[in-house]
Image 1 (cartoon, rainbow, N blue to C red):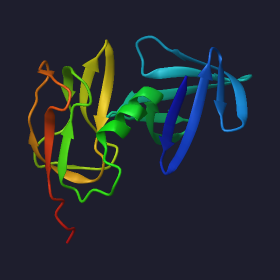
Image 2: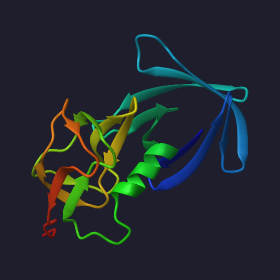
Image 3: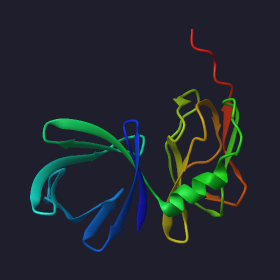
Image 4: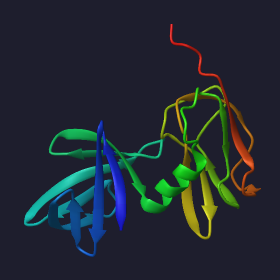
Length: 171
């Protein structure tokens, strides 16, 4: 399975196949196992073992601590990336507009609140469709004007979920 991973300003394509991971041209034996009752994971890359602290962020990303360094990581699978492409316009947005449901589904979580600034790629709504959770993300920086859905609500394809307002200039 292919994942698109952003670590800081670096974008990576990661392919997972059984117990192998491929990042760019490098392929390695890889295993990641949870240490029960802790946020710790045991990571094996080829014959090297490391312990990592893995925590989910409120924005839907991950904070990973390994070897004394902390990394903010965003991971998106192929399906989610495709859905993001469907929900984002091809041109530049000015910070106004809306977020609509790309398919019918059930709102699982709403991660945005009116008045909050959001950045491009920030998760805003989690929508369950066909037993899969899909994170719908901001297409550009904006201010959330109005949230029109709540958790547990069924939505139809094309239904307005969030209305954005103009992004005020920084002073």
